[in-house]
Amino acid sequence: VFLAFLVFAVASSARADAGWTEVGPVLELTPSIQGRYVVKIGVTQNQSGCREKQMFYQDYSDRGADHMYRALLEAIGSGKKVRVFVTGLCELQGHSQISSVTVLM
Image 1 (cartoon, rainbow, N blue to C red):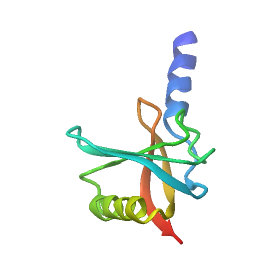
Image 2 (cartoon, one colour):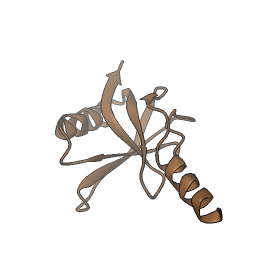
Image 3 (cartoon, one colour):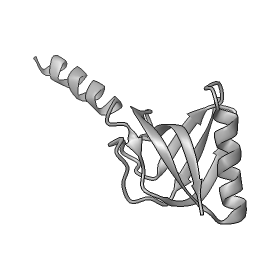
């Protein structure tokens, strides 16, 4: 019974709600050799329910990942704010997976 509860608790923490975050500045953008980039955005909450509220990731192999990366770079260079669409998937470090980026005025 305890094992079943533990499996349920882990599975439920790995998947949560999808939706748009609030708007915030890009605080950090980190490309890596691990097959993904990580971005820190100055938001206080996001729908995903993942542990790290300001940390997001995108795998390089996902469709549109390069376009989203360039949009984040543009936001950094211009000082514009962004919002991202979280898929509801949380990775082991508590970062939220994203599938879209909007750069705002």
